[in-house]
Image 1 (tube, rainbow, N blue to C red):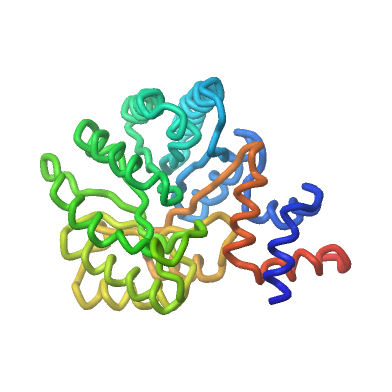
Image 2: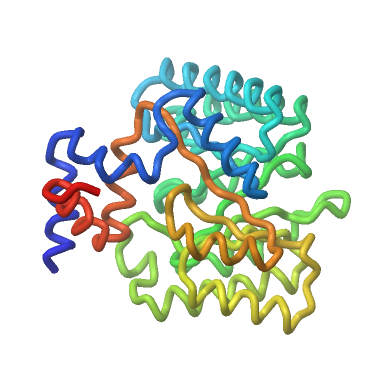
Length: 303
């Protein structure tokens, strides 16, 4: 309860305080910071997905600016040989302002990724965005099947039905490409499962469905129980290693990440950077209130 109280209070405190927590989970504010973090991960045999921080914008001008930034990022990271791909949030391209403009902005980014033989992951956001983001994915998956993927959130009650509907849109034999995560946004009980046991149960149920329907899966979790369960399912089904990968967030559970890599499994790390780090950081804090105690300790104890 104390950690949760601290976690709910810290977002209203000075940003310098939040940065104590954030710097572990964010590569930095600039493209150069992002490149440095990605090179280091590549040197460890880990691929990346690069994310420019920022979401829920308020003007079309911001959407245009974000589009241009992403095009620059794709140009830089691919030209410098970074092994990985890119993730984006539709709300930073105008999803909640004008869906047509959002679609056009994202398509320009995807076209740059296609030009560079790269890949764009469309992140799933809170429940108000899910229908629109599924629609965006369906349209782009039909046009650029090998270059577009989507995030699926296991804690949403609707997810299994969404997967069943999505399983019908294969194009030219290209497998659908999903990142399966638990889900982080705070949602009411009628929209999302709330208990740890429920979320894990549905995560594994979704994973089984995806594997049985020949989808490519980014198994995105820092939960050792889910990692071990996923490995057991993969072994039982005799799934080839080219059909899935594990994914984690930058700075989170590095020991578990290393153990997965040492076992010979493909790992991809989500590397966020940018000036809009504050919202991302406070969400991480609310997701894992235990981190709050480490922040408080850092204020009083060196190291």
